[in-house]
Length: 341
Image 1 (cartoon, rainbow, N blue to C red):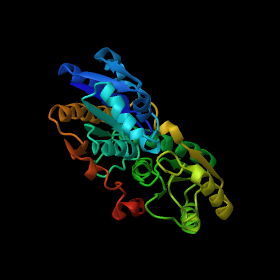
Image 2 (cartoon, one colour; image 1 turned 90 degrees about the vertical axis):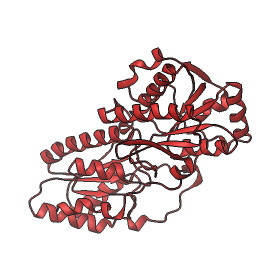
Image 3 (spheres, one colour; image 1 turned 180 degrees about the horizontal axis):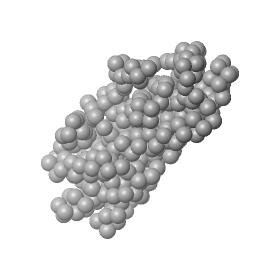
């Protein structure tokens, strides 16, 4: 069997590990692997290279993706889907494994409806794919966020400041919630619920009146204050999949906190630091298991499926189920941090 693979969308520290696992497993089973470069862009352009075990063996501790990524959407290009199908046929690909989030795997599913044999591996630091407990990338990004909050705590304590940390998460706040809890944030603000800036400021003043000489606020990039909810976003501020280009809530929040409370406040945006660096041990195990499973699905002819983890078990579900809806933080967890004080 000749298996194609691509990595699309935002990268993460575990992407290379999943790639490594599927190449090693495929080679052990006497399959060929060809990698399309820079995601769907490489498929459209017919740009691919063969991958063999010596290409990937050292990737166990390497973040990012050696075959590149992009946010290219073939369905935004006239004749794009047909061109993808033709390029895959000319590359003699029997099955295609796509490593990415809902956009990358959403394209795969739409092509599957045209007869392309696809298997998806969930990869997103947002951890927002609905059918899996965890996606490749989440554990490592969580480690980075936790470490950042640990560092912000010491400098915040030294200067008696409020430290606002903006964390990735467009629609789902898993990374901010788990990172905030692990990093001991005093206030955690998520995209799942609009927040009231007056309530935030009142809570910070209460903490400081009760003796706290610093505070940590963890805010997801997609969190929205009630007073700014519903603002129209211009079309040029969207990417190829129609997503708003986020950023700036941390700076706005820090300015409002200082203005309304008089507490000295600083903001830090972690940005792409959350996507980089070596994968954690848990990440390496998860990505390896998912890569192996993806090859197994190809061998057994189970296509238009996505690899998932539920509890300790690696399984697979139809793409339609996996992409049906984003995995949001449930209401009972949104305010979990408030139970601590």
